[in-house]
Image (tube, rainbow, N blue to C red):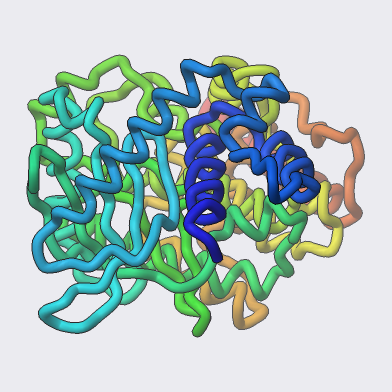
Length: 407
């Protein structure tokens, strides 16, 4: 591969990462380049400008940005950079070799425009420190955090594999057992994080990785917060931190006392997406999506994918209860039901909560219609039983009152 081709690849990847053009536009421009004459070569940046996908000023700024980050990442002592592997809203991630231990690692680098902002730097180090408190096979391990040449970096375990998001984007809908195996591993990761008072706050498909050996790794502690950090909680009061498609209602409200049940909601929303092929709530914008998390009733996953068991649907619905008091109280309790499902047994905790919820709705005279206005025979029988129980209870109460009046 020539230096020119290497540069085109780097430029194209960064243009997409920074939102200057779409993957489709990049692919179209690359196709155009294939037919360029050797005597009159055209660089990808020039083709993107010519096609109107990127402006000249954007291309110029991107070239400066690439040079700065390439220079910065090569200056990190003790590591040999092997290539760029990704980018997020606040950082770039590189594959590297840790020379002293001769092992492959991932290095997250804070770009210069963020390195000059004390608040971003503080958050970056906080992520590294949070990850450093965690030692679990299902969590990406932190290795080092530091600064070199004015750039801040975070070294972590390199995970060879894919994310859940990669599969979902490709149109893969997970089978029940396949999804359970993954969700159980993430639940174990959350159980460990919560045991050291850390709430992830951004559990979603993009932050769940699967190695080539099938080991699941929870990644990205960028929004993690210690439940004991009152100062941070107060400073974030009223602000919604998280990803709209998977965010818990209390996070949307900016509650101060966020706890592990917010992560259980995010895992439930991820579980929902995995087994149905769609996110729990859709709207035209982030505000609309979050409003639905707060107010709109969830369509049961087994109504979208009818091959799912009623027990799995109940577990997801309890995980995603809008009132956190109605969810699993912790990851340990959730794991009991998940393991029961994997064995083909009834998830007793979810079943009990689900029945109590139906009972409360009957007592309040609420409409028990499912979102698609269809009832399964099992549900109808359940409602009939509850009505009979309520009738019996009411009859006994009246009888007692009569007896007391006679006496």
